[in-house]
Length: 258
Image 1 (cartoon, rainbow, N blue to C red):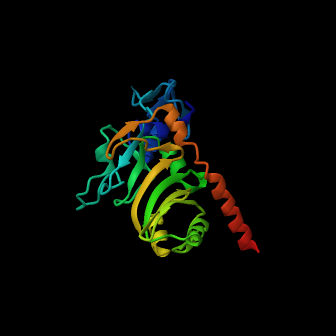
Image 2 (cartoon, rainbow, N blue to C red):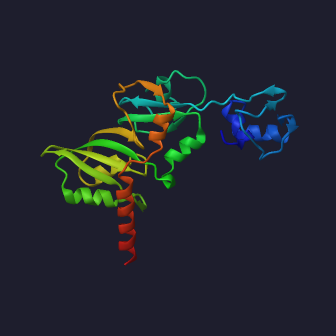
Image 3 (cartoon, helix red, strand yellow):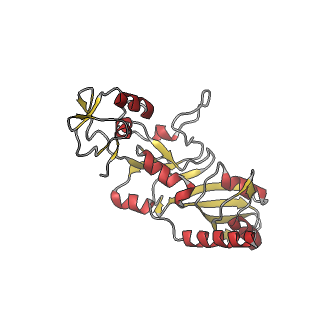
């Protein structure tokens, strides 16, 4: 396991918040392999002996990555706001300790979510700069035309900026509805629902089917399991549509420069 900043290791081991752990280090209360450390020092939690006030925390941090099939009506947050009695995604997972959510879904949406105690992993998968793909099966009202699909793929204006290019495939359509496969590298709040509504095709149902190349498979709603190394690799591997998304982004950039 690569070395990490000691304050991060301490926070992951539930010693205290990251900021409080930094203060504990400044107070000279932390030793690594027998030596008092200064803020910024790094260690390997699997091999180095880390003592806080004389108590060893080495090997306390074990990465946990859990996939959940979120049902409709369940909140993606780990804790509901005051007065909100809806269940949370965290209540579905019977694992102790602090867990970050990766790729939140609004309460009305369903599908693949990931919880982990690894903050760096959560950031890597969630932040748009890493171009990590998320795939959705989306049912919208009315028959969506090829021209409208092209507009959606190129990006539409939301608030004060244009949405990122995406990949959109029409799977099935009739006069009443259209079923789409949407692959994105961006995840603004309620983005798919807002884009679809702005184009005259409100969302009927939205299910996230994949993060990277990790799919839901046969996981029933509300169920969860911990990923093994192969499944984690699949999650970290972008969908093939990323090539198409990058091409559309380049085309849009060139067009804007003319």
